[in-house]
Length: 72
Image (cartoon, rainbow, N blue to C red; front, top):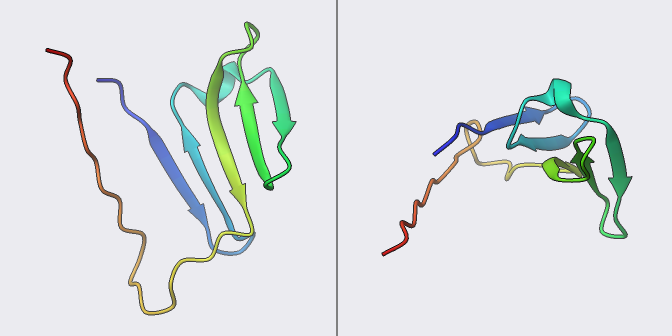
């Protein structure tokens, strides 16, 4: 499994998740749900950014849970 990169910007209130290198971003597309999709030149989604993200006040940092499913 490839690595993903998760960035929580507490000043801008965004949560960004990259599935590929950010340098390969060629196209950005905003959805109606205030989510920005970052795509490479081939149009494949390589990341997304959630606007107006605020973690729960009682949370100390950002908790991430990873669930890996393997094909039989």
